[in-house]
Image (cartoon, rainbow, N blue to C red; front, side, top):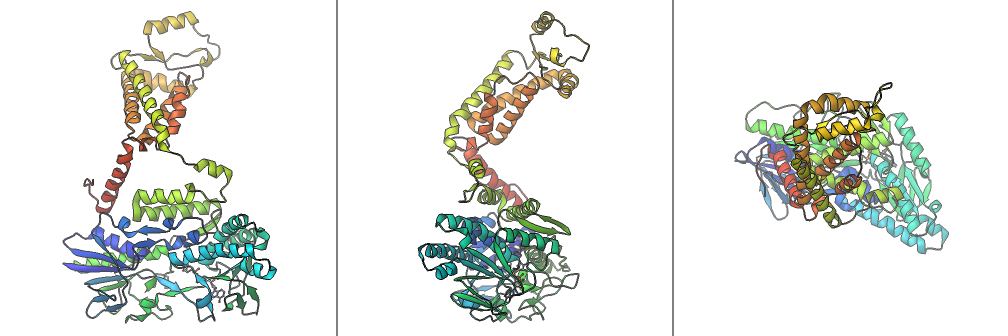
Length: 598
Ligand code: NAD
């Protein structure tokens, strides 16, 4: 049996391991993923944690969650050397042999030899980095609030981001909100706080279209971010920064986002590095090392030249695509099939500038504001669904939209206020009882066997010029039929047409369906089973009544709305059913077959 090791659980490594799991059976190979952390970091979201938009749990996913129900073994270890000739990975305490190897160890900050940068600046390339930035910023506000010397106070409250690329702009965007919150918390005027972007080039976000750069600049300036372009940083000390034009900024906070290079561990490996690749490894069109045919390099570690003769950018999409190609090709090697080419398809870029603004360029479709933010959320949800299923998506949505933040608006706070489901239990059960009684009453009235419903216009919706039959005649007909008129005074014309041409001609069928739904709703609410769906149907039924006979009792409607709030989760079957269903779904997605997981 072959041994396959994926080194690095970043975007590319996780994709490669999941893809290998899908393509191979347990008898074909042992698949292992090795990482120094036991979680996958959502690197593209780190700025949100650094700027206090979300909690730590939002930017990492436990590897055990990702690889649940797969045959991928997770190994937590830090590899320090690779012996390619003997096919061995070495950590200080262990050795791992392999037949095929996928390397996806990612990048690290590049300091370009700038004096004092590595020693004195923060970087934003790991969870730890983000945590440090957040803690330090809070600390600076604390210090400033106690400092009476104006110059020293100003230095504490000056926050500089070095580099106006994607990372830098996404981070400063978060700092806008964070600074507002901390200013209030520490009783500091927001005017005293300086947020500065220092960029070497003549513009920020250089790879974006000029219209999006302009919009981003406008948004940043509106939010009091100072943008210094044509200002390469040449020196950083503990309390100041110097640019090439000798501009000095007194600050204790420089966050360096001026560029990345390949991970130093990869640089040390005896693999041919690509020219102009900043240490990235030369690969062929199959993402295979040009030196060892059983070694594949993915994501930021591979210098892959695309169809346009340009290297792939260091972004999530190419990482995922190279990871998938590597997995495919390992399987093909094992089966003696020809290797496939990696054909990357890039769908564009999205840059968030805080949580209220974003710009995006997706295959030439340029958007900003709400549309761009929506695209970014959809892309994030799509990715997180792939690696973590429904639970991860719910987790993401809660972190992004539900959990409280200090600068939340009153409306948001009210919309997302949470409470204890236990208090809904009695109402839910009583609603179920009422539906059950409605169904039982209809059964007693013969709804299952006799035609009971009819559709006769009443005064308000008779066409002009036609007079209503007298009330006496009406009630006589009703009495004769002992039935229910589906048309009320306010029934709209289209609904009259619907009842007369579809419902009444199939009366028995519709009656049975109504009874079935009412009894079903009763059971669902009483037992707390699929309560959310039951509540939606219950609302639908009430709207239907409103259109036909008229809604005389709003009670059903309002209690049904309340039951949407997961009312079956407390003392209901949903408490067990929902997590169980998610487990079955995850197993099905990972293995494309059904197997009951307890
Ligand atoms: P980058 O290389 O894209 O940008 C670095 C910026 O720093 C450049 O604008 C550069 O001119 C500037 N710079 C370099 N030296 C400087 C100096 N001495 N003084 C001042 N400025 C200097 O780096 P990044 O923003 O960290 O991005 C790294 C990679 O990650 C990129 O490939 C990027 O596309 C990707 N990324 C993508 C997203 C996204 O898609 N939303 C977000 C973050 C990062």
